[in-house]
Image (cartoon, rainbow, N blue to C red; front, top):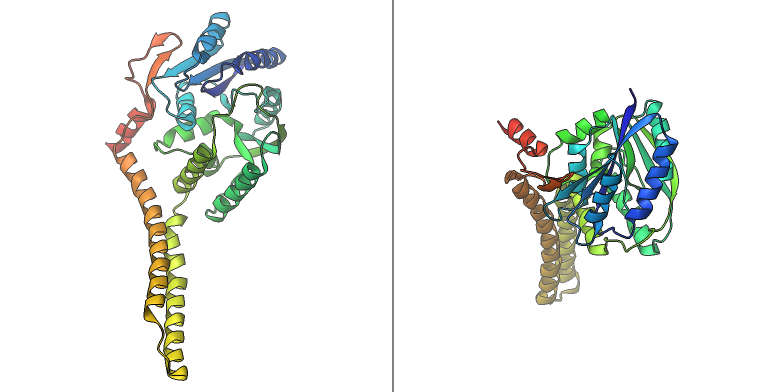
Length: 328
């Protein structure tokens, strides 16, 4: 019996890229006859003709599957839903815009067969990305690594192959605020790096902007570590020492020069300084409180409108059922 490889492809407004992706996937599957394939598109509320194109793929080839969300839930949730629905011995995450080249799949599978549980593709070059994006990405990984003792895979996106036991491990992690890049690192298992040059998009425009990337970065840090909460201690101690030193300076100046310090200037500076620190710390605490609030509502991660042509009644959201079982 052949092993089954599942490929999870979150899709949002990718009508221009899908025909190119379809051609490449058929080519790769033809080169690997010893394996069965399951292609799962997760349509994340696309407003263009992406879903119509995917349905045509399924009509032509039963290996192509899809789930259609009731609305746009975001890429992280789309990948979580993919894990919920795939049935393969392993799963590969990849984007629909061909920036994750399908030509790399045979090499990922090769290392999986060697016994690795998580074979991740690391970007050697990031063609089509500006200096600012490359620099901020590099700094993000450095900051994240400093905040945790778990090894983080740098310059690595979601393009990877994970074994079935990794799939099951990730499905045990039922939080609603998700960052799979961090979760891949947290679960551990045997990992293998594969280098590749990331090409530009084959068609269409990227759906990411700096605001979304910043939100993703904050979500990645706060979902992975509590180190920002300790910032209060790191900031409070040196601030208190600076206050003591400044107070000593003011007192010494009064005794040595016999002149009075203009108190209102010092007070204004101190108020602005401490107000800025308080706002920063309140923002960090508020971010974590917001995450707690979202988790306590215990809502399903997603709702599916349609699965392979059948309307979903949303009675078997496995993430939701798992939460209820654990809560009881």
